[in-house]
Image (cartoon, rainbow, N blue to C red; front, side):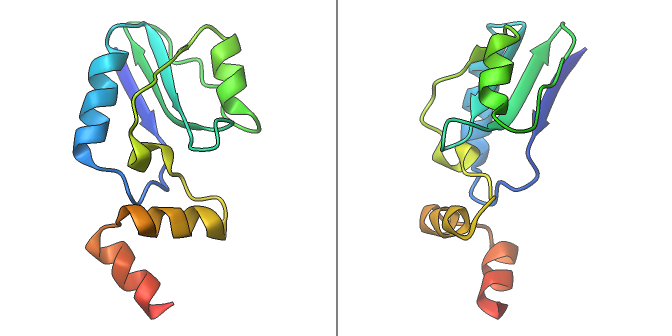
Length: 107
């Protein structure tokens, strides 16, 4: 099977970014996209291979060490998961969807 796992907190993700990452990822059995800090994992892909997830602290390093290929597209929305108020501010600068914008407006 082919599997794509994304973090659930990617409010600035654009469909074109995901499409490009998936296209690049299909060239590898297992691959991942690091978060904007380079330490976490925003997306993990497996094509005809076990997923073998290594999420948690320093997951980008752990996925790399497990043999997953790090994908290197620009994809700022895909890389911007929300762990801190600073991450949320970065996502707002990139642009978020209408529902997220409304929730932020309401505080």
